Picture 1 (cartoon, rainbow over the protein chains, first blue to last red):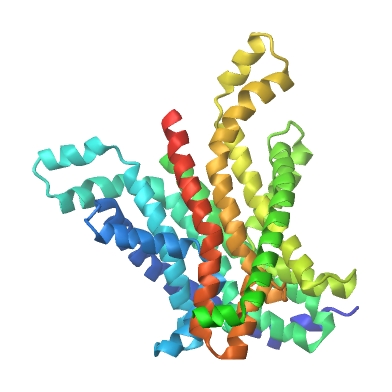
Picture 2 (cartoon, each protein chain N blue to C red):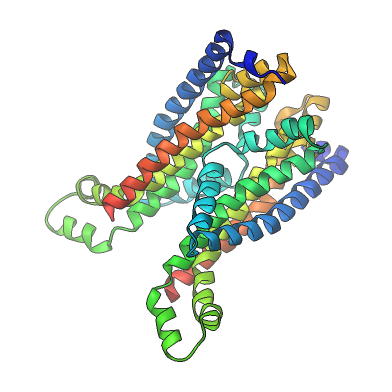
Length: 216
Length: 215
């Protein structure tokens, strides 16, 4: 079998274009879900009456649904009630909804792991609750949270591949188009896709491990 | 929404059946493979440790979709035919086993080494010490994260929809495109998934708290 044609310049460029879309979608989703997940985690940690409970219910529901369903829902069901995103933003919205719920749990857990006395001490030295959170609890909690947060980002990058079902033109989708042209291209394209994801995700997992060692 | 469910209840329940079936099969096999890989990882043989490490790192760092599509597209092309359900379930098993291996390895390592030593010095053999002293403690540590892996497994089984695996997500997709009522269809699918995952999630939260107190 002749595999040589698979990696023509045109095909490589096409794959890299896909990678660029993956990077954009993952990058934007990481930033958005970190911000939203952080806010949700703080609200749940602060135990604000009613609000924390409602947000907690939301997180539990989202965390227990498949991401694939949320992607389908965002792209196919929301237009029925008048909310419309294009493919690119549907993928980002769905990923952000799902991953921010996951991240909020990590952040809440990290804050809970800081001993109670820290906040009490901060309050008794005259800091406000907000100051205590920002200057005392968050810096300490962050050490516990960072490694699982990076792991969650790895999961997010892998999860962008699911957007192939709404034809987001990312790596997996472009690889599919290329191997659709010839059966000779199937195996090379699978190797190429696997390598691209593996290199990005493995590099990040090493970062997570380093962080874990440093903060221990 | 109720009307839609009534009209298509057969398909929804059929999908639910395949989702459950795939999850249970994948759970059993990924537990077996995961435990084996975990034992390899803490064994004294270097080649075994290296093989186990490559397995875990490789499959944890590539998308489940690629593994499932490999069995759906590549394997039938070069080796033997697989239907969507089988291909998806094999992919799910391999992917999950890598995560389970890590969970179990961490659980065994979390039991203080003094426990094994103390058991040995009071006359237990290595196997007895592992069986009566180390494993019961490791299981306590491992059960909550394993439960979370099972929840992930159920959610991830929706990957079957991409490889025509007849599962809940797949049926929902068919119903949505037949009725054009996407909103209600996906709402029903969501509720059916929650019926499977939410009770598990609540049980796991309880267990986590209980084991944390007993420490």
